[in-house]
Image 1 (cartoon, rainbow, N blue to C red):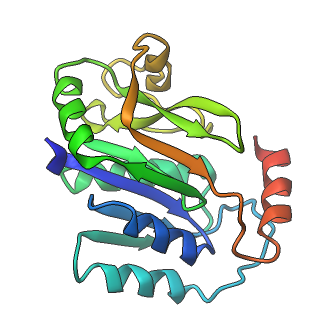
Image 2: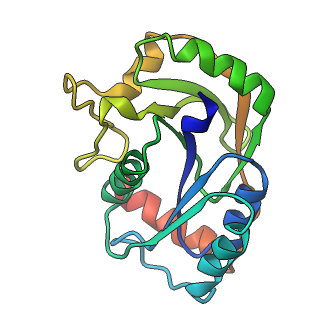
Length: 203
């Protein structure tokens, strides 16, 4: 059921990206705000800016906001999925605030009926990663009670311990109703250089 699906977003210092994401979908959205513990950059926007955006949109749709600080990237993503699960959702669609989401809700509703019958922990979505098309495991089945440890690229299943990201190498179907594109614009003056430094040391 489409009502069991929530968009989960890890963000920091990107209120414009969060605002765009919330506007791009009628699905509920969880925003987990906070700087990774090894990110050197300083925020360009007041912390309450993103929170205020979420509060404004929450008058018309379900928006959940949490602020966390000092988490590793893996721990922040783990917190995000656990929070989604605690709210009773079955499906988590992972979209970062520096990504542009396009979703055809009618087609997604149809696809989800078939995915409900499958037994995979993740499903692939096509991402335009700065003009490089990539299949990424971005729709996660929360009934697997997924969790991260130290590596933000591996999501373990509590049911059998496997990396559910690898399910997309078995299930070759790519979701047709959703596309994600990395935003080539950076909404703060130092975000590009800060992200490059973080990526070099932590990826």
